[in-house]
Length: 324
Image (cartoon, rainbow, N blue to C red; front, top):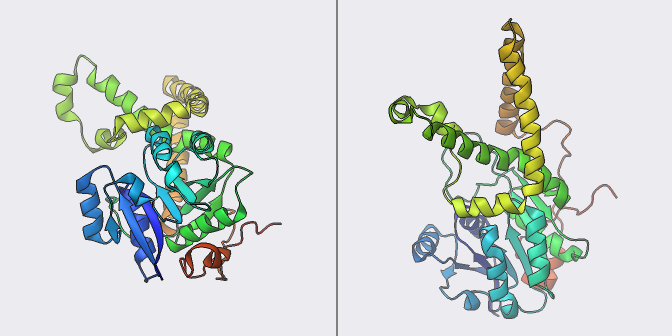
Protein backbone atom coordinates (compact mmCIF):
# COMPACT_ATOMS: atom_id res chain seq x y z
CA UNK A 1 0.00 0.00 0.00
CA UNK A 2 1.44 3.36 -1.03
CA UNK A 3 2.22 5.87 1.67
CA UNK A 4 0.06 8.96 2.03
CA UNK A 5 1.79 12.13 0.89
CA UNK A 6 2.26 15.66 2.22
CA UNK A 7 3.71 18.30 -0.08
CA UNK A 8 5.59 21.33 1.22
CA UNK A 9 6.07 24.11 -1.33
CA UNK A 10 8.73 26.50 -0.09
CA UNK A 11 11.45 25.02 2.10
CA UNK A 12 12.56 28.11 3.97
CA UNK A 13 12.51 28.58 7.74
CA UNK A 14 8.85 27.73 8.33
CA UNK A 15 8.45 25.11 5.61
CA UNK A 16 11.56 23.17 6.59
CA UNK A 17 10.75 23.40 10.31
CA UNK A 18 7.26 21.97 9.76
CA UNK A 19 8.80 19.20 7.68
CA UNK A 20 11.18 18.34 10.50
CA UNK A 21 8.35 18.41 13.03
CA UNK A 22 6.18 16.13 10.90
CA UNK A 23 8.97 13.61 10.38
CA UNK A 24 10.08 13.32 14.00
CA UNK A 25 8.65 10.35 15.81
CA UNK A 26 8.03 8.47 12.58
CA UNK A 27 4.79 8.23 10.64
CA UNK A 28 3.38 6.29 7.73
CA UNK A 29 3.44 9.11 5.18
CA UNK A 30 5.91 10.67 2.77
CA UNK A 31 6.88 14.34 2.71
CA UNK A 32 7.70 15.73 -0.73
CA UNK A 33 9.36 19.13 -0.88
CA UNK A 34 9.60 21.72 -3.63
CA UNK A 35 11.47 25.00 -3.70
CA UNK A 36 12.35 27.20 -6.64
CA UNK A 37 15.91 27.31 -5.33
CA UNK A 38 17.81 24.04 -5.91
CA UNK A 39 20.20 24.94 -3.09
CA UNK A 40 17.35 25.41 -0.61
CA UNK A 41 15.80 22.11 -1.71
CA UNK A 42 19.10 20.31 -1.27
CA UNK A 43 19.61 21.82 2.18
CA UNK A 44 16.13 20.72 3.28
CA UNK A 45 16.82 17.18 2.09
CA UNK A 46 20.17 17.07 3.90
CA UNK A 47 18.68 18.20 7.21
CA UNK A 48 15.90 15.61 6.93
CA UNK A 49 12.98 18.02 6.52
CA UNK A 50 11.63 16.04 3.55
CA UNK A 51 11.81 12.47 2.32
CA UNK A 52 12.47 13.61 -1.21
CA UNK A 53 12.41 16.77 -3.29
CA UNK A 54 10.72 17.33 -6.62
CA UNK A 55 11.97 20.12 -8.90
CA UNK A 56 8.75 20.05 -10.95
CA UNK A 57 5.99 21.88 -9.06
CA UNK A 58 3.19 19.94 -10.75
CA UNK A 59 4.72 16.54 -9.98
CA UNK A 60 5.30 17.51 -6.37
CA UNK A 61 1.52 17.71 -5.90
CA UNK A 62 0.60 14.51 -7.72
CA UNK A 63 -1.16 12.14 -5.34
CA UNK A 64 -0.80 14.40 -2.31
CA UNK A 65 -3.43 14.77 0.41
CA UNK A 66 -2.13 17.94 2.06
CA UNK A 67 -0.27 20.89 0.55
CA UNK A 68 1.60 23.35 2.77
CA UNK A 69 2.70 26.52 0.99
CA UNK A 70 5.44 28.68 2.51
CA UNK A 71 5.80 31.42 -0.08
CA UNK A 72 5.55 35.23 -0.17
CA UNK A 73 2.02 36.56 -0.50
CA UNK A 74 2.90 38.10 -3.86
CA UNK A 75 3.67 34.61 -5.22
CA UNK A 76 0.68 32.80 -3.72
CA UNK A 77 -1.72 33.40 -6.62
CA UNK A 78 0.80 32.10 -9.14
CA UNK A 79 1.57 28.99 -7.08
CA UNK A 80 -2.10 28.15 -6.59
CA UNK A 81 -2.78 28.74 -10.27
CA UNK A 82 -0.08 26.26 -11.22
CA UNK A 83 -1.17 23.46 -8.88
CA UNK A 84 -4.98 23.82 -8.89
CA UNK A 85 -5.51 21.27 -11.66
CA UNK A 86 -2.98 18.86 -10.14
CA UNK A 87 -4.90 18.43 -6.88
CA UNK A 88 -7.15 15.45 -6.33
CA UNK A 89 -10.57 15.76 -4.77
CA UNK A 90 -10.45 16.30 -1.02
CA UNK A 91 -6.95 17.79 -0.89
CA UNK A 92 -6.49 20.47 1.77
CA UNK A 93 -4.25 23.44 0.98
CA UNK A 94 -2.63 25.43 3.80
CA UNK A 95 -0.88 28.72 3.09
CA UNK A 96 1.50 30.14 5.69
CA UNK A 97 1.01 33.90 5.74
CA UNK A 98 1.27 36.71 8.28
CA UNK A 99 -1.74 38.42 6.69
CA UNK A 100 -4.87 36.33 6.39
CA UNK A 101 -7.58 38.28 4.58
CA UNK A 102 -5.55 38.88 1.39
CA UNK A 103 -4.42 35.24 1.36
CA UNK A 104 -7.99 34.00 1.80
CA UNK A 105 -9.16 36.14 -1.11
CA UNK A 106 -6.41 34.70 -3.30
CA UNK A 107 -7.28 31.17 -2.24
CA UNK A 108 -10.99 31.65 -2.92
CA UNK A 109 -10.27 32.90 -6.43
CA UNK A 110 -7.75 30.19 -7.31
CA UNK A 111 -9.24 27.10 -5.64
CA UNK A 112 -12.87 26.47 -6.40
CA UNK A 113 -13.04 22.82 -5.35
CA UNK A 114 -10.56 22.45 -2.51
CA UNK A 115 -10.47 23.47 1.13
CA UNK A 116 -8.11 26.39 1.74
CA UNK A 117 -6.85 27.46 5.16
CA UNK A 118 -4.40 30.18 6.17
CA UNK A 119 -2.02 29.57 9.06
CA UNK A 120 0.33 31.98 10.80
CA UNK A 121 2.75 30.32 13.23
CA UNK A 122 4.02 33.01 15.58
CA UNK A 123 7.77 33.24 16.13
CA UNK A 124 7.72 35.04 19.46
CA UNK A 125 11.03 33.92 20.89
CA UNK A 126 13.16 36.79 22.20
CA UNK A 127 16.76 36.78 21.00
CA UNK A 128 18.77 33.98 19.45
CA UNK A 129 19.36 32.96 15.86
CA UNK A 130 16.49 31.63 13.81
CA UNK A 131 17.19 28.38 11.99
CA UNK A 132 15.02 25.53 10.80
CA UNK A 133 14.44 22.95 13.52
CA UNK A 134 11.70 20.57 14.58
CA UNK A 135 10.80 22.53 17.72
CA UNK A 136 10.84 26.01 16.16
CA UNK A 137 7.13 26.50 16.88
CA UNK A 138 7.01 24.58 20.16
CA UNK A 139 4.46 26.17 22.51
CA UNK A 140 3.94 29.06 20.10
CA UNK A 141 0.55 30.29 18.98
CA UNK A 142 -0.39 28.71 15.65
CA UNK A 143 -3.01 31.07 14.25
CA UNK A 144 -5.60 29.44 11.99
CA UNK A 145 -7.97 31.40 9.77
CA UNK A 146 -10.51 30.28 7.22
CA UNK A 147 -13.73 31.24 5.51
CA UNK A 148 -17.12 30.21 6.91
CA UNK A 149 -17.44 27.66 4.10
CA UNK A 150 -14.32 25.74 5.12
CA UNK A 151 -15.16 22.12 6.01
CA UNK A 152 -14.53 21.27 9.68
CA UNK A 153 -12.46 18.28 8.55
CA UNK A 154 -9.98 20.65 6.90
CA UNK A 155 -9.73 22.73 10.06
CA UNK A 156 -9.14 19.59 12.08
CA UNK A 157 -6.30 18.59 9.81
CA UNK A 158 -4.61 21.98 10.25
CA UNK A 159 -5.30 21.75 13.97
CA UNK A 160 -3.45 18.43 14.06
CA UNK A 161 -0.63 19.90 11.99
CA UNK A 162 -0.14 22.54 14.69
CA UNK A 163 -0.17 19.90 17.42
CA UNK A 164 2.39 17.84 15.53
CA UNK A 165 4.68 20.89 15.63
CA UNK A 166 4.02 21.10 19.40
CA UNK A 167 2.34 24.46 18.79
CA UNK A 168 -0.92 25.76 20.26
CA UNK A 169 -3.79 25.96 17.74
CA UNK A 170 -5.37 29.41 17.95
CA UNK A 171 -8.49 30.04 15.86
CA UNK A 172 -8.73 33.70 14.91
CA UNK A 173 -10.97 36.07 13.01
CA UNK A 174 -8.88 36.91 9.92
CA UNK A 175 -9.80 40.60 9.93
CA UNK A 176 -8.98 41.02 13.61
CA UNK A 177 -5.76 39.06 13.16
CA UNK A 178 -4.58 41.33 10.35
CA UNK A 179 -5.29 44.44 12.41
CA UNK A 180 -3.20 43.13 15.30
CA UNK A 181 -0.38 41.96 13.04
CA UNK A 182 -0.29 45.37 11.35
CA UNK A 183 0.66 46.93 14.68
CA UNK A 184 2.82 44.18 16.17
CA UNK A 185 4.76 42.88 13.15
CA UNK A 186 4.36 45.15 10.15
CA UNK A 187 4.66 48.55 11.82
CA UNK A 188 8.03 47.67 13.44
CA UNK A 189 9.39 46.57 10.05
CA UNK A 190 8.16 49.71 8.34
CA UNK A 191 9.54 51.94 11.10
CA UNK A 192 12.88 50.15 10.78
CA UNK A 193 12.98 51.16 7.12
CA UNK A 194 11.94 54.72 8.01
CA UNK A 195 14.72 55.04 10.60
CA UNK A 196 17.30 53.68 8.17
CA UNK A 197 16.11 56.13 5.52
CA UNK A 198 16.22 59.09 7.90
CA UNK A 199 19.68 58.21 9.22
CA UNK A 200 21.33 57.28 5.94
CA UNK A 201 19.80 60.29 4.19
CA UNK A 202 21.05 62.82 6.71
CA UNK A 203 23.97 65.12 5.95
CA UNK A 204 26.02 63.61 8.77
CA UNK A 205 25.62 59.97 7.75
CA UNK A 206 29.05 59.65 6.15
CA UNK A 207 30.79 60.17 9.48
CA UNK A 208 27.88 59.28 11.74
CA UNK A 209 27.59 55.70 10.48
CA UNK A 210 30.87 54.96 12.22
CA UNK A 211 29.09 55.53 15.54
CA UNK A 212 26.07 53.35 14.79
CA UNK A 213 26.04 50.44 17.21
CA UNK A 214 23.86 47.60 18.40
CA UNK A 215 20.83 49.75 19.18
CA UNK A 216 20.79 51.13 15.64
CA UNK A 217 21.39 47.70 14.12
CA UNK A 218 18.50 46.14 16.06
CA UNK A 219 16.15 49.05 15.37
CA UNK A 220 16.76 49.05 11.61
CA UNK A 221 16.49 45.30 11.00
CA UNK A 222 13.60 45.15 8.55
CA UNK A 223 13.58 42.35 5.96
CA UNK A 224 15.92 40.30 3.82
CA UNK A 225 13.30 40.16 1.06
CA UNK A 226 12.08 43.72 0.36
CA UNK A 227 9.73 42.62 -2.41
CA UNK A 228 7.96 40.10 -0.16
CA UNK A 229 7.67 42.66 2.64
CA UNK A 230 6.30 45.29 0.27
CA UNK A 231 3.67 42.86 -0.98
CA UNK A 232 2.51 42.00 2.54
CA UNK A 233 2.49 45.63 3.70
CA UNK A 234 0.53 46.80 0.67
CA UNK A 235 -1.99 43.96 0.91
CA UNK A 236 -2.70 44.91 4.54
CA UNK A 237 -2.37 48.65 4.03
CA UNK A 238 -5.75 49.62 5.51
CA UNK A 239 -4.86 48.06 8.86
CA UNK A 240 -1.31 49.35 8.60
CA UNK A 241 -2.44 52.92 7.97
CA UNK A 242 -4.57 52.78 11.12
CA UNK A 243 -1.55 51.54 13.05
CA UNK A 244 0.56 54.40 11.71
CA UNK A 245 -2.09 56.90 12.82
CA UNK A 246 -1.92 55.35 16.29
CA UNK A 247 1.87 55.67 16.22
CA UNK A 248 1.63 59.34 15.23
CA UNK A 249 -0.64 60.04 18.20
CA UNK A 250 1.71 58.20 20.55
CA UNK A 251 4.75 60.05 19.18
CA UNK A 252 2.90 63.30 19.90
CA UNK A 253 2.58 62.26 23.54
CA UNK A 254 6.31 61.53 23.77
CA UNK A 255 7.12 64.78 22.02
CA UNK A 256 5.14 66.61 24.69
CA UNK A 257 7.09 64.81 27.43
CA UNK A 258 10.37 65.97 25.89
CA UNK A 259 9.15 69.56 25.65
CA UNK A 260 8.17 69.66 29.32
CA UNK A 261 10.26 71.65 31.79
CA UNK A 262 10.48 68.70 34.18
CA UNK A 263 12.05 65.34 33.27
CA UNK A 264 10.11 63.39 35.89
CA UNK A 265 7.07 62.64 33.66
CA UNK A 266 9.45 61.36 30.98
CA UNK A 267 11.21 59.15 33.49
CA UNK A 268 7.92 57.80 34.81
CA UNK A 269 6.69 57.01 31.30
CA UNK A 270 9.93 55.22 30.42
CA UNK A 271 9.83 53.25 33.68
CA UNK A 272 6.26 52.14 32.97
CA UNK A 273 7.02 51.06 29.41
CA UNK A 274 10.22 49.29 30.47
CA UNK A 275 8.26 47.33 33.07
CA UNK A 276 5.66 46.35 30.48
CA UNK A 277 8.32 45.05 28.14
CA UNK A 278 10.08 43.10 30.87
CA UNK A 279 6.79 41.44 31.82
CA UNK A 280 6.10 40.62 28.17
CA UNK A 281 9.62 39.21 27.77
CA UNK A 282 9.10 37.09 30.89
CA UNK A 283 5.79 35.78 29.55
CA UNK A 284 7.36 34.93 26.20
CA UNK A 285 10.15 32.99 27.87
CA UNK A 286 7.80 30.98 30.08
CA UNK A 287 4.92 30.96 27.58
CA UNK A 288 2.51 32.23 30.23
CA UNK A 289 -0.11 34.71 29.12
CA UNK A 290 -2.63 36.68 31.11
CA UNK A 291 -6.20 35.40 30.58
CA UNK A 292 -4.98 32.79 28.11
CA UNK A 293 -7.28 29.83 27.57
CA UNK A 294 -5.71 26.55 28.59
CA UNK A 295 -5.33 24.36 25.50
CA UNK A 296 -6.86 20.92 25.49
CA UNK A 297 -4.41 18.22 26.52
CA UNK A 298 -6.30 15.08 25.53
CA UNK A 299 -5.40 13.07 22.47
CA UNK A 300 -8.30 11.50 20.62
CA UNK A 301 -8.60 9.68 17.29
CA UNK A 302 -8.84 12.33 14.56
CA UNK A 303 -11.52 12.07 11.90
CA UNK A 304 -8.94 12.53 9.16
CA UNK A 305 -7.06 9.42 10.23
CA UNK A 306 -9.69 7.42 8.39
CA UNK A 307 -10.37 9.94 5.62
CA UNK A 308 -6.92 10.96 4.45
CA UNK A 309 -3.70 9.89 6.06
CA UNK A 310 -4.28 6.93 8.30
CA UNK A 311 -2.07 7.60 11.30
CA UNK A 312 -0.75 10.86 9.86
CA UNK A 313 -0.70 12.86 13.04
CA UNK A 314 -0.78 10.05 15.54
CA UNK A 315 -4.45 10.60 16.32
CA UNK A 316 -3.80 13.87 18.15
CA UNK A 317 -6.78 16.16 18.11
CA UNK A 318 -7.86 19.38 19.72
CA UNK A 319 -11.52 20.28 19.90
CA UNK A 320 -12.37 22.86 17.28
CA UNK A 321 -14.70 24.81 19.47
CA UNK A 322 -14.30 24.14 23.16
CA UNK A 323 -16.69 26.85 24.22
CA UNK A 324 -19.79 25.63 22.39
